[in-house]
Length: 609
Image (cartoon, rainbow, N blue to C red; front, side, top):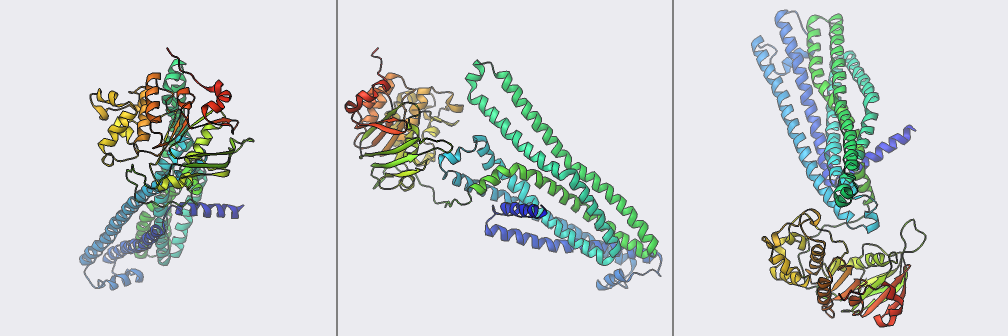
């Protein structure tokens, strides 16, 4: 059991360090080596305090000697100096050593925190890049709030509340060892008793706090994520929640979760005070026992000198022990909070992701051929016994208009996700312009565009939503004017006081559902895609606007290959190929007139009135 725990701790340590590059690890080692130097500065300062003690007793009693400290005075050339000169010189050197050591320590800790904070930003960047290379099912394994926590707050907790304290903890342990060895050389018995005392303190605090720290860290993470999820849940379903009279339910539920989090936070914040008072009490007891022992076993001068050294050493050791103990407790609790980030790092560890220069806005797509070949395509969702799509085959020529139709659950969405490369086929293959969808997107960014049924908008301006993913200076005005006209947004935008700089509000609260959908269509058309996929993209539009936009989109025939999931007859009737899906299989394929008898029950015929 003990061996398993040691292996678990080793693996956990490796997991922490895995977020650091080789160069970063070298920097950490350099910091630790520098801490060795600071440890020796601490030790010299402590010995100098003892030297001051021997100077004081020697002035009171000239027969008093202690060869250990007299030798130290001779080494500094002060053996025969006057009392005043010895006191001033030794006091000055002692203060200099201790102050310089403190200033250097502050400088190093500041550097460590800045270094790891910057590293945290890099880790977030790398994790986001790797997560976005995963397929849709892997991304959806975590809730949005869990992913958000793991990529942001979890990373910050890992680097600033786990890694930074770990580096400082090791540094403090190095200094503690150096001071303990130095004190042992001065007085072995007193040093051993001091070490034993602090070991007892450490054990007592371990029993009192460490287990609690991990439990509290886990609870804190859970309540943070749950409360955030409920806030997002009620805000995104605002209308339904109000109409159903669930306002008080959500207010009470969120309040209860925040209350639980407040209790956990308070208990976590109280833990350091326990260690502070316990250590202070033990240090006071130790100082009294050391004083009694020194005066019982040594002459007054040696006792005062040695006691001075141990009191000075204790003054340095006690804060170090306190920091070490609190650091371990803090790390234990924060590891539990950072666990989603650590798990995510494990999950994407094997994903190779190279950051390249960001691709600029492009609307030419040279050499891209908008042909789609689907061969023996099958896909099955994990945990399901039946295939979502099974042995689908078809070919789309460049410039064709293809309509996909089928009842809910027939496999339309899965087929679209496979065509877009967000899902990987279990069997068969898809080729777009002669390569897989993922390769096509990487090679010709912007050549393929997608319009979902539910358009996501950000809390920004119309222009920011239109150019989503591009910098404003990259997109020219002519491209913007072109897509505004194609999506029938030009008249709407021209009547707004602030035009394109009008804010759409949170989740598009300042625009209608139809305007939001037209904004999504304009966004997709911005890069002049040669392959455009529309998934019920006009379902929220009124008949007149839908007819106009459909006419404009169909007008792209020959220049742009169109794949449209739709049920409107005015879309289907103009298609070069209609694919009818049922239970994941193609039950009919051909012109509208050829399969009309199969799909008549699925077609929405516009009301002539």
